[in-house]
Amino acid sequence: MTHPAKPRSTGILPVRPARVSPAGSAPTKDGLLTLFRKTGALLDGHFVLRSGLHSRQYFQCAILLQHTDIAARVCGWLADKLREFDCDAVISPALGGIIVGQEVGCELGKRHIFVEKEDGKLVLRRGFQIAPNEKFIVIEDVVTRGGRVQETIDIVRANGGIVSAVGVIVDRSEKVKPNFGCPFISLVEIKVENFAADNLPPDLATIPAIKPGSK
Image 1: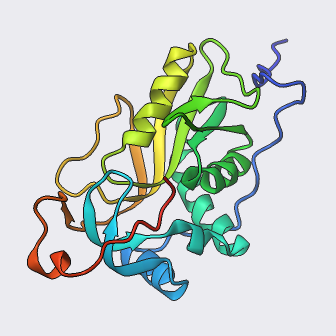
Image 2 (image 1 turned 30 degrees about the vertical axis):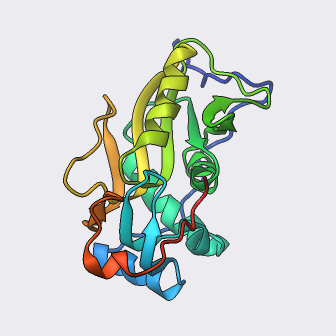
């Protein structure tokens, strides 16, 4: 008689079962954008993104995700698109990816850890561990160039782990989609113009820029 393989865990507690998602069917792109606007999470103006690029629009996912019922639904939709990928755990970059990573981890029944900035770069702290050959899904809220996601991937691989996929709520990478060396899944792709600081259009050049996101 054969017995089913037990789920792998690096912690002392057993892996919890996946949560039954209350999300329902994922909305269209327009439907998700409407949700961002209704919650005040899609801002219009002149913004400096984490990538250093400038934009007329900014997705402030923290405003969207402050509503716990909405966070559960949106992250449930993302988790549903990631269920096909084998993973033992979820990892995300602080701060923006933490809520999304925690919710996706709950949906998938996996533990969630995060990396955070120390001396200007992302590091693994707080006693979090990555076991050799442990499989991770990297979760972020919004991606433009994908620098923080790539840093997170590098940390997983440097510790002997494997990255099965990357999942984000909003992919606003515009012309060049990031190549992370693994499947890149987004809940929605939004083509928003991004501009280098030394090549701003006239309308943005006259508006003071703000940086509303995490550093």
